[in-house]
Image 1 (tube, rainbow, N blue to C red):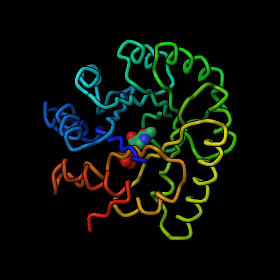
Image 2 (image 1 turned 135 degrees about the horizontal axis):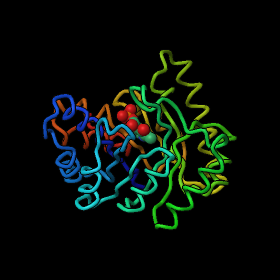
Image 3 (image 1 turned 45 degrees about the horizontal axis):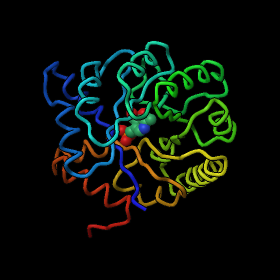
Image 4 (image 1 turned 30 degrees about the horizontal axis):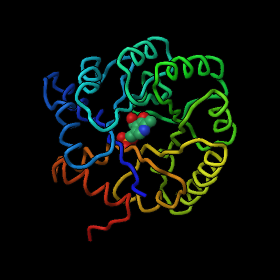
Length: 243
Ligand code: PXP
């Protein structure tokens, strides 16, 4: 089965915002990536709009032909925007103002009622809802209870592992989490901190249909071009080694 690659294009917008220019344009990145065979485009509209902005999401909705996954915080502002723009999927992520990037999974247990309400509003608008969580049994079960269709397991700790032992421990947690998610009827995807070196290890996690990857691909594209960077990662997750 083909494993899907969702490209997170936030970092193209980060580069644009570094100079407050109108380039590089994340819309252009989405189109190039789609031509290169990416299976979906992911972007995170943050409350502070520090990279992706409202205009980007509106245009992405019009031009993305594959699959648009909007990452967003669990707030009524974001639910309103999602229900207006209607991406294919909304991934609810935790958001802290000072963080450099998303630092961990969503606390579904601690935000049970508001998530239940927001997941249901998004689903009523026909949006598939994914929750970005740690591979933790309580969070996985709570995700099912609030009505999510998909869980994206946070692989950031795996990505930051400094030793093989640490990495293996994280893989074991992810395997357990993925097995549980699959068993209770959730679709399971993975995301955060996956790169061209550690992707081999992450492929050991079963039941994964989709990988959401941003930074490593955009960083590599500086040297080899976005098309090549996307193709290489897509081949890697599908076990086609370029040699
Ligand atoms: N998935 C989610 C939910 C994220 O928040 C991010 C980063 O914004 C990613 C995947 C991609 O992570 P990275 O840029 O480290 O590949």
